[in-house]
Length: 511
Image (cartoon, rainbow, N blue to C red; front, side, top):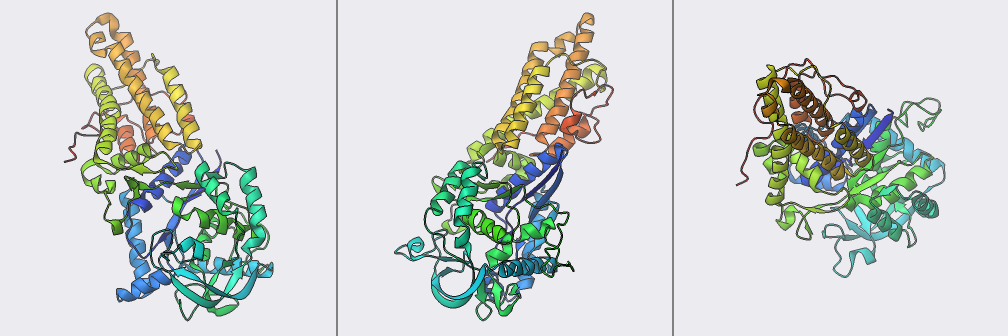
């Protein structure tokens, strides 16, 4: 048991929630729920990035103020996360007064430490990415290398952060801590980026061009670069900088009780550079600890191409929630994608994963509860477990190793293997035959008690990914709450009144 702080990126408030946002947030939610089940004190952070030129322009196009647009989009993200069963502890917005004050305090500390200077910048700017790119990055076609959008050559006065000073220290951090950036492909990508000289980072934009942002504390004619603003949200939510501090006007007085450093920053692989280069060097410059882990996941693709509305190739599994339920979609997303790698959605693969739920886990739950009702009047018999102890212990151990190592697909495979073993146990024990023979009564009691206890364990293992269905199974087993991992050993389920109900995962056709 301990403390666990994890974050998603904060999502840009200029567009609707989509599969990429949903996958990141569900992945974070599964990890948060897993750590709560382990007894940890969890802080799960998500939110919206409310500033920047893109929001300023979209708001103008829609006849709204930037804040009106951001308010509307924040509501849509929060509604989407409610629909997907997301259990975030904090939803942060960069327009919050506390966050603005923390950004100011962080910039002041960097300035006081001698890491900020004023200069003129000439470069290629992408409004879509809110980033400058080099000639090499934009290539001969002069498009942003991430999404292929337009870039514009800009010359303007900016403030710069001396990011180049921290290049060697960052390389040392990555090389000495091989599990700091995962998966290894992303770690190698960042090291490859750092093989070339690291340039200083422009951290401001002129207010004459972008008015929608947090003013630079010592120069109100400049606003904070949106990525510096956005990344700082992780510190804001942690409480590591107190904007109300009186001992030090920068908010860095005596160490405060806080949740910093973050245990894991989760994000898509397209923003690994900002999180693994910009952010750590800013923290180094401000004398703050680095996050403990940076996990960059893959994309959902069609063939070899990332799903994109602009490309017209979106086949969104989120659209299946009305027919299959949110938990089935969550299961598919976590079970199908190897964490850190790309994965391809197809209707056929979705049905395969749903049938796995229905025919193995759902079938086990329905037949066990039905037999307890039929043979023991709906009450779990008072009997010691008569099998599956070895299989259960092995499944729980494999599950926990996998989730601790962020290999979620492996962990849920281990849980499903336990359900598969329990179905095999039913076939071996033949409770229906035991019920016909008077001398089989004790063995039938042990069999039903074993199956009931196995269902409790499975409810615990599946709760992080399928919270609604796991909670429903727990209610049918007579549990007030799904147990924590430490409560599983020696759990006595005898005497509990069970309820059968309809199948947890009914038959549904995709067509």
